[in-house]
Image (cartoon, rainbow, N blue to C red):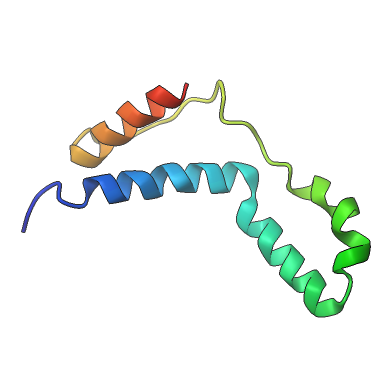
Length: 82
């Protein structure tokens, strides 16, 4: 057991999840895959991309529960993003 050994990896996953969730990246990928399976991707890509615009993180408040290795590292890096 080595406390903090994976803190950096977990912090990066948390920050990545914030970006993925705010921009609805996974939803967009799944939607395009479904359109591709249905043979509709070329016709619908421009029309449907507005559905996945998402939100900007700038000006939002980030709540972090606990300031151990992971929480403190996440807070530090998130504050550097602006």
